Amino acid sequence: MFGDFVENEELENQKPTTEETDVEEEETLEEDSYDENESYDEEGEEISDEDKTPYQILMEDLVEKGVLFADEDKEYDVSEDGIEELLEDTVNARLGSLFQENKELAMLYDVVQNGGSIQDVMQIYGEVNYSELDMSDEGTQEQVVIDYYTAKGISEDRISRLIESSKDDGSFGSEVQEAYSALVNSQRTQMQEYLSSLEEQKAEQEEYAREQMVTLRQTVNNIEEIQGFKLDKRTRDDFFSYMTQPTKNGMTRLQEDAQDYEKQLVMAFMYYTNFNSEDMQRRATTNVSDKLSKALKSQKDSNIRSGSSGSKRNSNIDDFDDIII
Image (cartoon, rainbow, N blue to C red; front, side, top):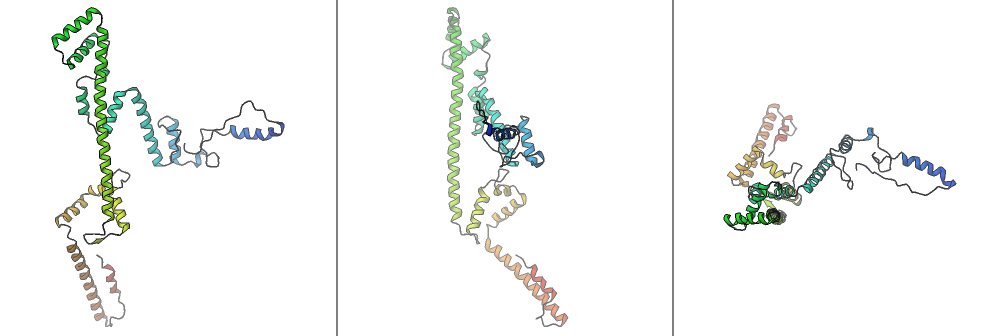
């Protein structure tokens, strides 16, 4: 899992020849010392605890204690990403085991995963989840039959007569089973139909999102300039990633910046000025010009005081280094 685990199979009913005995005894000793529960490097050498990384020690310890589940058919990176993958596999494995025992819970989980609401589920089940009823209770049995006939549109008086008649002729048990199965299947069918509609909606939304992503990619690729700012291919690619590529926290850099209060104020001001890039450029140019004029004046005054011609560099010329946009 965290290294190359090799399992050696011994050949049964095969006796070594005299010439092979010494060699095979040596190989057998090597095989016996090869523990499949230990970690080995690519050359088959056992990795001691001293050579293991903290991540590897932690991962193996958690799996050995049963805290985490490891898929035997997978190899996990010995890193933080590997631990996250182990956690994900553990959750999925335990959920899978739980859902096998409880189909209703599995369906409810699927509903939530596909964007459904608990309120919709409650409307489907109403006040009773028939699959969870204790059908050994006589009062419950009778109520199930009443609910079944009521759902079929039969009046209360006729329902009472049907129940009394079935009790008299001994068919009430069969009637209860028929009503119970019909009500349970009805609720499950409604849930399945609701889940199917959610899955269709989710598929449509994902397809729409893909189409929007393609359109955005094409739009960005065709942009050569935004408000006076030139965009080369490298900038366009990074700009697209900035808007669409999720970071480790699940948000894009754009979404992260949108939560920054100061950056929100900057964007609000940009909206306020209607993204007047000409005014921004004018202000930037004026700022540079002012700094340049001050630097030149400072150099001239220094030359006059020192009596130099100005052709010789003065230390005050370093003021030019402070000119920034």
